Structures are given as structure tokens and as C-alpha cells.
Image (cartoon, one colour):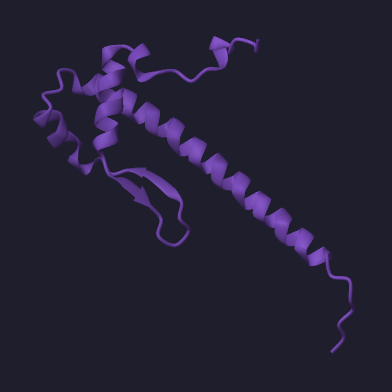
Length: 108
């Protein structure tokens, strides 16, 4: 048979987090996202409606919830920036390789 998966390398399920963190993930998911239209860069969440959402969902501890939301946003923005940089470098390598693949000499 195959090897058992290493639990240390498996992604966490949201239910494994404390209730405060689960609330923060939920509230975070309700916020709209900001993207740079020119570059397609993820800029983070739009926090303008946060207070209203806390009231609607009767969040008991908005300060703690906000703390976890901002912490999660920081991790997410960093992750997306790293992925975008990897993609940029990969495309750069592809274009450099494509430029080297010409076998004929063109003179003007």
C-alpha cells in the first residue's frame, strides 16, 4: 500500500481554528477585494464596510476579529505577491528562451 500522508504537511481545515479565528475568516470572506486594474496586482480587501458587517452579524469582539482578519490579509497579500513574482520570472525565462530559438540570421 501507499504511504500515509504526513499530517504536518496537510492543509488545516477552518474548523481546527478557535472560534474567534473562524469568525475572522468568515467576516474576511464577506469583504470585497481591491485589484490594480493596470497590473492585475491584488491590493487587499476593501475595509469600508467592515463596521457595518460586524453590526449585522453581531460580532462580539470586533477588535480581536479585526486583528485576525488583518493578520490573514497580510499572509494572503504576501502569498499572492510571491506567486505573481514567480509567474513573472517564469514568463521572463520563456521569452528569453524564445528569443534564443531562432536558427536564421536576419539582416536589414
